[in-house]
Image (spheres, one colour):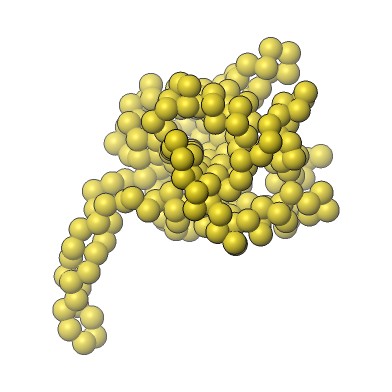
Length: 212
C-alpha cells in the first residue's frame, strides 16, 4: 500500500492482478463485473482499516474471551451511477449492515460539466461515514459534485474508492476537498482528448453492463 497526500494506492498483488484483467479488451462483461466486485471487496478491506473497536466479552465453547467488535461508527456506501454500482456488492459483503445510497450524475457531452439527475440517500446519512464508489476517477467533476451533494446532506466523513484514477481527477477532488481520502488501485498517466483515462480500461459502465 502506497500512501501520499490523502491518496492511498493499493498495491496488493491480488488487486493489481485483477486490474490487469479488467484492462484487457478481451475480458467480457460477465468476467469484468466479477472482477470489479472482487476488487471492491479487497479495497474496502483497506478503506475500513480505521474503524474504531471496543472490547466485549464473548462466551466461547471453552471460556470467556475478551475480544473486539466495531464500535460506534455506522457506514453507508454511495455508488455513482452507473459504474459505481458494480463495486457495491463486493463492499457490502464485508460490511453487510451498511446502508446504500445512490447518486446519478452524467457528464454533459457539450459543456463537459457534471449534471446530477438522481439522488436517493438513507434518511440517517448525516450520521454515517460514507464511502463513495466509482470505477474510474477521470476529470473529477462527477466526484466533486457527488461530494457536494453529500456535504449538503450533512455527511462529515467521506472517502472515495475507485479502481483507477488519474492525476487530473485527484487534483480536482483535492482542490475542493483536500481532506477526502482517495483509495485506488492505480493512478494512470492522464486523460485523452475525449477525457478517457489513458491507458485506463475504457468505459467502465458499458463494460460492466454490456451496453457497448
